[in-house]
Length: 117
Image 1: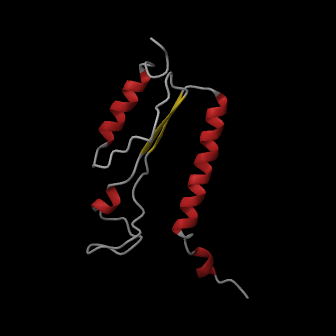
Image 2 (image 1 turned 60 degrees about the vertical axis):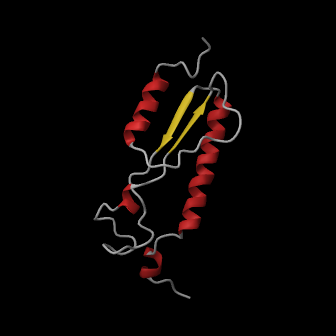
Image 3 (image 1 turned 90 degrees about the horizontal axis):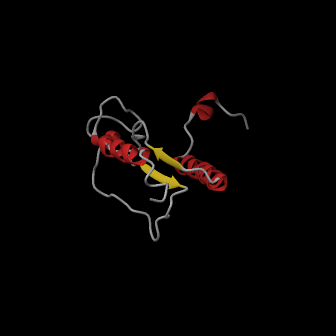
């Protein structure tokens, strides 16, 4: 059966793409842990994927910066801390801002999270 150019141009299924991303991040994190280096990893998407359409635009279109596009998940993970956090990850489930992430980066840059006092 011949594959048409339209079929080849179709974007990959979201679940497949998400799983690939998580697998690659897991491999990356494993390598960071093995290195023993003191590292802060920050993952912030450029924008949402517009997987669902809304009243203003169809699915996949990202021209109008609606909340479904501008409100995106972010992640911060530390490696090589002086006392690794025990228990479940800390989850912030309320809207925040890039300013909160920048404050976290500034606090990490002083090194106190990584070196004993």
